[in-house]
Image 1: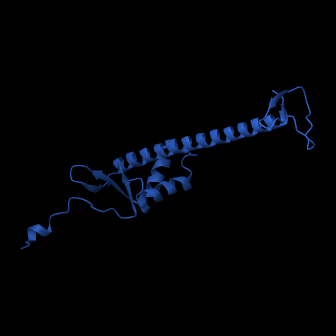
Image 2: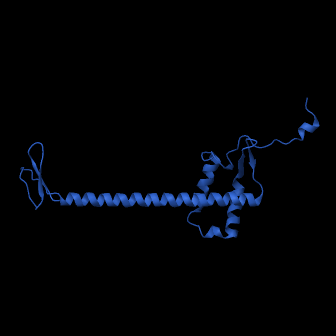
Image 3: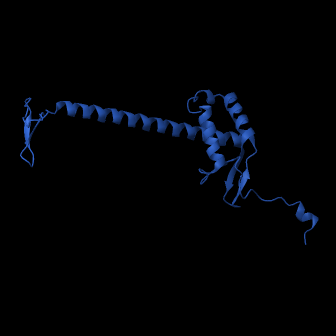
Length: 163
């Protein structure tokens, strides 16, 4: 039987976060709220505005914008529930950490993309050089020797390859 005292007991935490929650801690990468949170950081161009967010007033406005859209939760390993982060200083720390991680991921992705592009250009350049260095074989089976070495194939056809 429930008494009045039992009604005043507050539940120890949040068991199942809603989709408007940004969860901080392990195993929260695929949560819909976190995906939206990262997408919002991407839309805001946080990675490009590195120096702007070093100013406290810019960070304050970012936290206000994000607080309107999200509830900030952190996983409590003792109770196995999520706790809502309401203190401004704690929210600041969590958002600041997220921004730094977002910058690092953006920088790493940009470096990977630049490396891939440089590799593609280098491969294309090498292929073009290799093709231009090869001596062509005429349709009549005659060989043109442009000062290259001959390699014998299995059907006794010769290829002139300039090395």
